[in-house]
Image 1 (cartoon, rainbow, N blue to C red):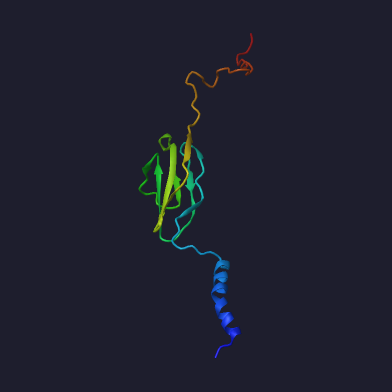
Image 2 (cartoon, rainbow, N blue to C red):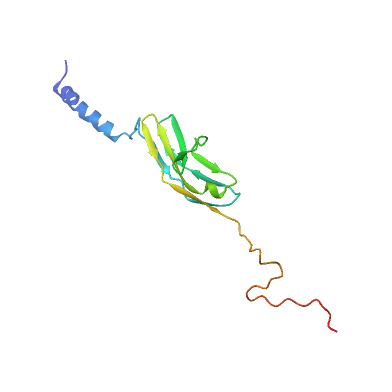
Length: 143
């Protein structure tokens, strides 16, 4: 036989249980992937390398697909994209779409600028005086 005191405890039990559940740390299952670190704009000298990277929180399994100027890069399917021996044709906009079983997230668009090597004017040779350069010393002997 239960006393009134025990019955009062049982009536409050659901409220106590609910309070305990609300105090528990949140565990979210089946959440969309969240890009926590976006790709940054890059500059690379021609024939040097550049890299884009994202960090993501997600529910496994996860897939990545990088895009260059809105076209998919078929072999770029990880959280990092490496461009080796950058050429002017590689300059442009890059982004990634991250997917898991619940949906997708798209990164910001990051740009790659490829810096061309300095080109010398063919009219300028090694013995051409430029700006405030002192006159070249004569190699001829007087007399």
